[in-house]
Length: 296
Ligand SMILES: Nc1nc2c(ncn2[C@@H]2O[C@H](COP(=O)(O)OP(=O)(O)OP(=O)(O)O)[C@@H](O)[C@H]2O)c(=O)[nH]1
Ligand SMILES: [Mg+2]
Ligand SMILES: [Zn+2]
Image (tube, rainbow, N blue to C red; front, side, top):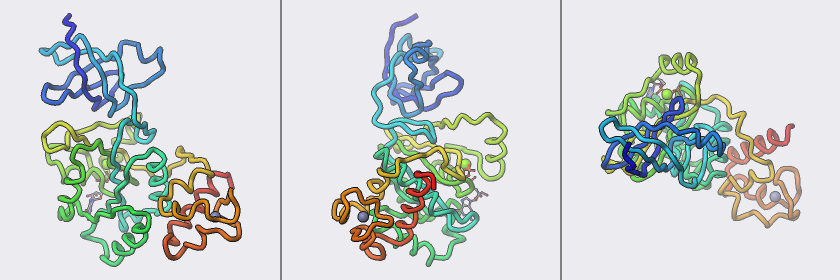
């Protein structure tokens, strides 16, 4: 046994074996040595990990500690994510904007930068894409229209990924896996009905794999994730939601009631901004989320 120690990033976690990528050196398959069961920390993709007993020939080692996390996602299970490409489509399937807004609020709560990616541009009315841009502009969200089929818009996405630990998230069937394949031909993810059959067939761990995406420098990574149809497990406290709608921020603290929830109260600065600095669609999502998280 050598006592060579290295530090790298966990890119994959399957059945207690963690794949640790050490840029410029290699990838090592590392069990966790029971240490983490005791401390009740489960290492996840995105974690920065120290490994020891490194065997260069076998490409193995042991995980002995993970560095403090900047953030931690439950869906997908990942840590230290810096960017989320929230992929959706306006046709086949037409996704629920409430689902998109729920995911956006969740990402805001984790301080992960979201970028909206409207896929299937090739079969989408341009006017609908423009409407989405108008809906999200006041919140400051970038909207990138793309097509995994024609490859339109992909350069802008690729540029964005540099040096980020990025995830592709979004509802099922919107083309996340197709996009990752179109962006990085060396990555090969199952797409279409096949991917959904495989997903159902295996005991899904909701874990993900990080692929190198930083132009070969080893610094950027991207992960595909299984799509979702609902986000039941995401429960953001109703009182916090207003902080996760960035376009509300200029108006917070300016309502008549200090504890205004911006729903039924009179003299509400947020409600007064609806139709201008706050779009109606986004405000409707806010109300729906507050209602859901209060159980009514
Ligand atoms: N017309 C068109 N079809 C697309 C595009 N991107 C993906 N598709 C199709 O949409 C279907 C779903 O694509 P996937 O890449 O499997 O979608 P996904 O988001 O990974 O789905 P899940 O893995 O279930 O979450 C497939 O039949 C793709 O061929 C696109 O840009 N244009
Ligand atoms: Mg997929
Ligand atoms: Zn208010």
